[in-house]
Length: 592
Image (cartoon, rainbow, N blue to C red; front, side):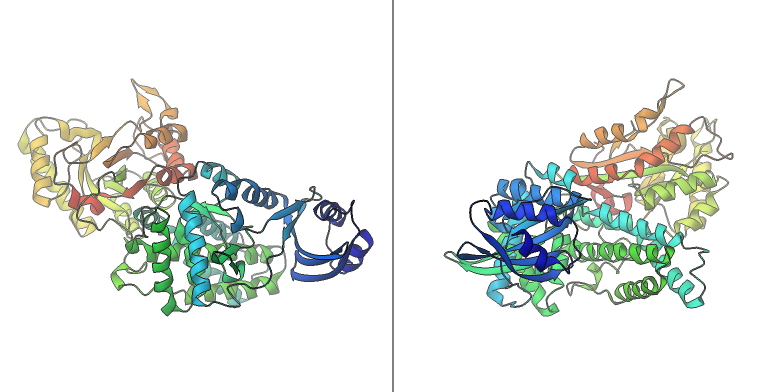
């Protein structure tokens, strides 16, 4: 076979052909019968359909050249993951795999033919494909191997959005002052795309809440569900779908796969396809998709992919390939400008309808639901504290903050908060190092700071708490309760919100930064039970203006709250990020 294969692939320029020959020899029993490669058809740059004469029989296989890491997860998928879900037939059989060579591995698959859904999207074939997609999602949503799948493949949930948006921002910022940006139109293009990505980055908390609102556990995803990757054929049991090209297999929300799939069809067909998916999911013992969060989640998936496509032209420009880079960057900008909702949904539910899209809308807290408010105290204390809190909101899990209205940086904090509309802001009353000894003195301070809050923010606060928990003093508490009641907002420790105050890195005058490290917070998140919980935190960039003994710990808190493992843990434990504004309708019960 060697000579015939060399002759057929001579013009392909493919590396590692010696390893491919050995793999094909094993797959086709070349040591037993004569084998000759008689035809090659290039399907993609690294994918070839090869026709062989094996003895007196003809056989066709598909050879794919993959990067080593991609080949490893595709092999795990074919030989371990899919069989474990009783879904071995969902992908073409992996006939042979070559030894790695120069960072590449050849996979040899059975040839499923060319009857893809893209070529023939009839209603019965579409329904067969939808049944398979739902079966995949349902069977792996709580599968024992899902953790292994996650470790060996891509995270296609919120982390994919964050990593791609911030990766694209970094790549474009690296072009600042680059000699390739000589033309004014190129500078303007780079600035427009960068501005768009920065706005998307600021939407991360709202998109995180929307994904959590969907209520669906992460599952195994195909990762590239174009109709060209779906083959449908007849079997004794009827039409059966199979999925090709699992190179982008990953773990994440169903909406990631479904957004790709639905966008391949005319808009008027998409609701019916989604209904078919829901029926198939229910048949597998799962739950229909939560429609309210779906619009934003579909958009998040699509925007993640667009942001990923910004990175490559930006890097090409930096490396000198400017014609392709600027052309491609302009093309991606046009995608951003043309993006439209996957489904026609009521305006109030669209992702662009409100900066708080995706927040809790129910009037009843569902049994077993876990809502987490992450509230950063001391907003307004110093510029460094403001910067740290806003970063922990934009990049991390902070959903809420409390403003110290008489602190030096309070006006700056109030102004900056207008660029973070999803950040809920309460009043952090400071009674001073020596609080008043009488109720009248407490009342005067409360009234003054309440008026100051409204003057700075133009509205009332979402919640009420105090510096150093001074509101818990028996003299002060009734005054705080009266103000909270008047405004109709929760008072820390005196509502249905359970407090989680242990995220604090000091006690008995000693520093314990490990208490606010990632491992510690992951343990705390794992212990959160049903209901509404408030985690109190103090993230900051420590600056000279900060008058506090709690310094290093604030920097550690900021890094921890922005850690990707912490964001992922919320989804793993079924915790829905929330703010006091989101959950105010639930806070009429007694303190828990």
